[in-house]
Image (cartoon, rainbow, N blue to C red; front, top):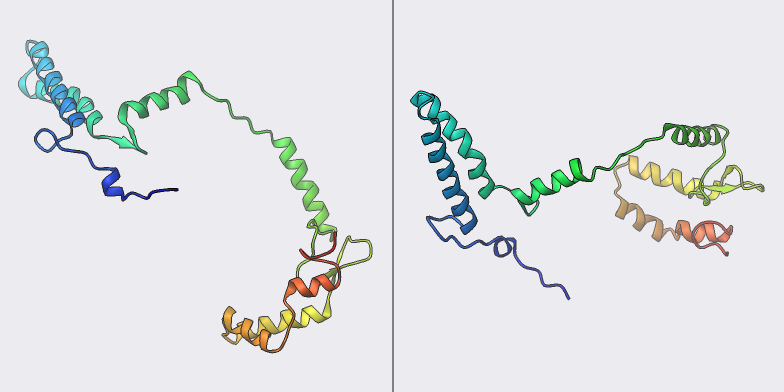
Amino acid sequence: MEVKINREIRNYTESMFFGLSMRQFIFSVLACGVAVGLYFILRPYFGVETLSWMCILGAAPFALLGFITYHGMTAEQFIWAWLRSEMLEPKELKFEDSNYSKTTMDIYAQVMSGKHLTGTVIYGYLWDEKREHWLVDEEAAEVVRRIFSLTMEGYGPYQISRLLSEAKVEIPAVHLARFDEGVNRTK
């Protein structure tokens, strides 16, 4: 049994400090600590404006780590997953064109020769004696032409279905089964 829980309840986080979750608060304090540390370390070497930009750029990654989630993963979980997939355990993807081209060309040649690649015929056709080519089934083809003309006249699928039912036209599965074809053929 599956219990469905609203997204608002699933994603609920209790705000602990200043409207921030515990995680966001800790990373915000860490970002402030990094900014203050950079200020005191770099103050003798740079002017105030340059130093303020360096503090902002140094603290920004730590501040963002507390707020970013991607597909339900925290930032550090995402970074670890990326490192594993790209650096630690990379998978080499190979594409071998020779098999693809040969198969495609074989299929193309069979289709161009008039041979059909499916095991069953579609409504409006029947197999020849050798089961290599389709022949037009005139009885079903007349129904297909009628459906096409009704569609061109503006009838929708439900209206066409009702008209064909009233005229006692067999559904395609029943019609093809009479010729031992389609999904209901004898095995």
